[in-house]
Length: 449
Ligand SMILES: *Cc1c(COP(=O)(O)O)cnc(C)c1O
Image (cartoon, rainbow, N blue to C red):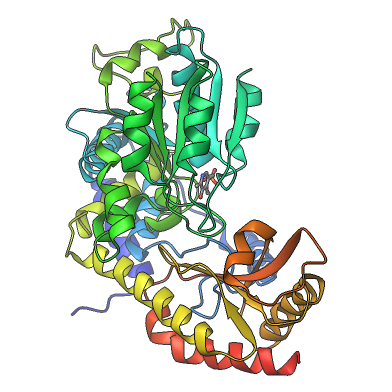
């Protein structure tokens, strides 16, 4: 195994890229390091004012370090700074985008597809809702579970669509009876199915939602911004496996490579099963000069300028780590699942904590033991602070009573919600670090008694 440094590797790749333009007259692009260095050092000082997102003891929000290869490929692409709006602005990177997106579509189970990268899940979901409005023949209502990402209600408002939150069961999954009732209205354009929810990693029963929506003539959009890649490791939990198996029958799917796909921000993706939705995007812009007859990504995207570098980084990552069940990338996700099961098992035995619904993916949510909801919320915040003191960084989540009560016997409900602790175990290293994470958690629990 060769251990060239990242900077040496990048320098060698930059020289190779420059050779591709060797027939041009030289331009002096030398930098004045005397001027740059003090500013760059100031930047380093400023950036140290962050939680240590890159470290395994950070288990708080959804933050996962990009793969070193993604960082290098992104930096290399900065030599060109391509724009994937039109082929003229990013010829190579547009081709790489199409190849990377095709791999995501294959993983999802789409036999045909149309899709592209976006700056993130928000715009990707907006596009899917917009297409459902355009194809909805006057139907203008969006359904998503009450645990779905808030972007769906907000974007429905942006699109002038009505939004209804569908009730969930005590595991945070969309309730099918509530869905059936809403579908009877006859005005629904789209059911958003979340795999998995941002708060607790809950997985909606897609396999049961699909036939209900089909019968009602309603589009099914899968918001898998967070959980999409878990398609590769869905087996091992029957409910999870059944839900993810339905992905290939959805009308559209959103996956964020910048969440679990080892990519820098911002890299989201929207995928449509039927390539004919391309007509919804059609436009006739006098500003964009299309120099070839091929499909331009700018013609099937609501965003105009987009970072070609994101496509380059994703393409490189998929080249190194193919999306194969049983492959190296899948093994990394599998250890995230293992980490979650280890933590859940620990919480179930811990005297200071209360286990809630078992994790479907790699997000574990649990309560801090106390007599009442108000005291439990306060104690969760104290645990959060005490853990941070010892460099273990958690997150907090406010749970509605209905989602906590069935799991939490004996709690006095003096409030409608309870604040609980949340761990996103997104790094493959989390499995190995679990003994230290639980030790620090145990100490934080004892310190807040
Ligand atoms: C993160 C997330 C989003 C929003 O995506 P961004 O990339 O943050 O814009 C939407 N839906 C789900 C389920 C998410 O987890």
